[in-house]
Length: 279
Image 1 (tube, rainbow, N blue to C red):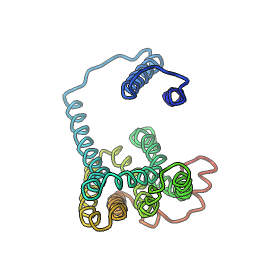
Image 2: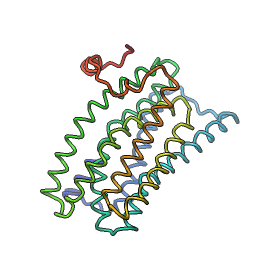
Image 3: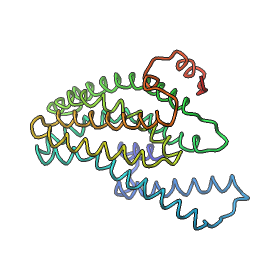
Image 4: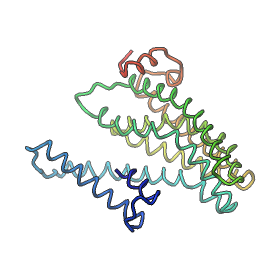
């Protein structure tokens, strides 16, 4: 519904006279209200109960660690923007930002699956083992190889047909970003696993490593190499965070690092059957 409204406004089919931010807030409240109605209509015997002191303490401890982790990751996502603007200029920032948006298309599918995985893994009635996570990661890796080809095609199409000519200077930085963004897709899914198992310190440490590596590499590379340096810093930092998360996952399971990326014909069968079963 939100997308339809935005399209109607964009093509002047609908004119509601609201600021975009106001519209976004209204739609968010409508969505929340609709979900509450659907939830309670399906649970007519549901009663509101209070939290115990232990539950509240656990909730706030969990929320605080997640908040700090997300805050660190936010700075890791944005620090290169700020440093490009500081060391270079707004024009370079715009070119880099556009290339960065193309690269982030690699994270759409992993983020959707990560949101679905957390309740599945955390549920006591589901037997979702580490082997299933590995298989899912390999399947995502296959898809992302196709998505990379699609991103390159879409980027070239937009650079040549819609964006100003100077924006094509962002294509090479886009290629430099791709390895790090590809590997970080693994981290997105592993972070969901660690969260569901309440091993939050791993996500915190991974985000801290990502931030420290990216800010160090940015300061060293951006003044000399500009947006190409920022793209290299991204790839190095996201790859470093992924390596750390893989090592932590290997310590909790009996999988090897080769299992994350090797070709397995059974994975293709799972794609056809839409199943994620143990070997």
